[in-house]
Image (tube, rainbow, N blue to C red; front, side, top):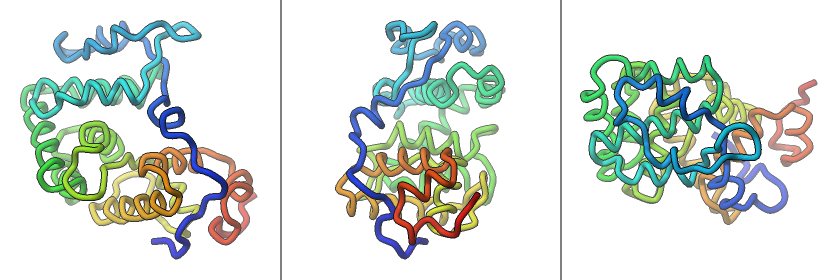
Length: 245
């Protein structure tokens, strides 16, 4: 996908701060009151202290704690909710879109999510991605690849079979890969082979940069959200592609 072994300059960000500490504000009542069942709400989210603003803040570290019980259907559902809150924050429209995954039979959804976690543990992240999103279809209705990879990341990182860890792939990560690798990936709807290519490249870059694979994901997310001029300034010139103004 990329000929360059590492497109980034300088030293990698600190994982504890830049990744595990990445936090979003959220309104507990706005989420909790819209769940179809009260037992879907992770109690860890109620224990978070108020943030510097109006709302408490949910970081990746807390979502990982919720996801520790995702091997069974009830725990998988709470992990899904925690990942949705972290990935959305206080955005009302985003919250409504995320909660669509809870429409219908939540028990069946929990069974399918727990099955994905078992596949992660037994067969690795690409097989789990194939289970959730093979042939452009979603195993769980309204759980698209971007949200699905968040679920896989939080439930499988440091637990999945093999040497590769599941990572988040969203539109900003895809845009970063397009910018850095002269690729033409879509903003949504990636194939299992594209997810496999992404994991392979992210893990190779992590090894070259002497950091963790999810640090690469976090940096790619920032590259995807950045102005193209900033991307050219802070990545290696030959990896940044033609000028974009």
